[in-house]
Image (cartoon, rainbow, N blue to C red; front, side, top):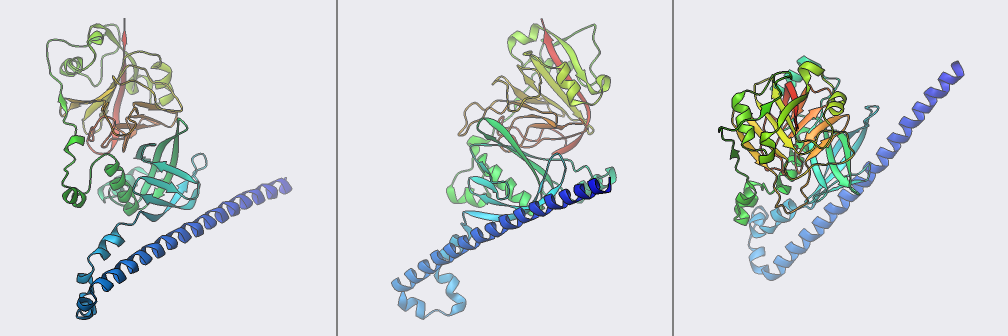
Length: 397
């Protein structure tokens, strides 16, 4: 027994050593590439400086060193126009939760995870979202949120998703707040939301990428809920009339049955998938602890799958405090068919930057942010929210 235990301990030690060596070699390679990039930039800067000096030797000799920055305004542009930047991160192994030191290169149209050799290009990018850290307790999470940690504050755990060979890939990592802000600016740029300085320089305000919401009108039509089923813990009469104005005309005259509710069926994604499958028009409705009500309509039910699925009829909406909807942005510069995504780890709607709706496996935590698939803003009370109730309604003949 002692011999077996010793062998197991040795195996764990060997695995950790190999992982550390691999990470070290990868970081060395990353620093080598970074140094090469800096040398190339320095050479370009020297060529620029010497070229200007040759063309204006008389002016250059009459200016003091303290004024040299005024002589060569291109210097700032060359340094600020670097094609990529290096950032340290910690890659999180999903099953074990073990963290491995790593690094990423962030370029203009790509993100490279050096250690895993994962390349996330702009055209393949699906989305990025925060992930609840299991080690944080309730009080720590509240303190982190109030002190500014999270999407725009300190460090945190994140998950990036992209398509590779028609299969959605995922990678979880921990990064500082500065790295997260850099990634946020990059993905916003991919969505057409440029930095103010870049907008001013280009003369474009990106208005064509801003999608105004469509108001949901409370009319005479309403969705008919099954009289024999459980009453909704979220939807009231005005909500049903508002959603009825947005769903396809044929679905307004069907009866809607409650397929899943966290109040009645417990908090489990597996139960949700088991009860809400099939090719049936579906309403996913969420209320967070601040009272915001939002959700999505889809032509398909919910099922665990390795890639995105769904149709262009999918749209997201908010019922409280405002009654608005955001349909699919069918005209897009990049591939934009990220409608429904469901695994045993999460449920998500939309992509291209952030998810319009993202729910964790326990249906306790969620997130919502600017989503390129629908051009929608944050639908919940804040980007990271706590779930109060989740309901899934499906149409029956």
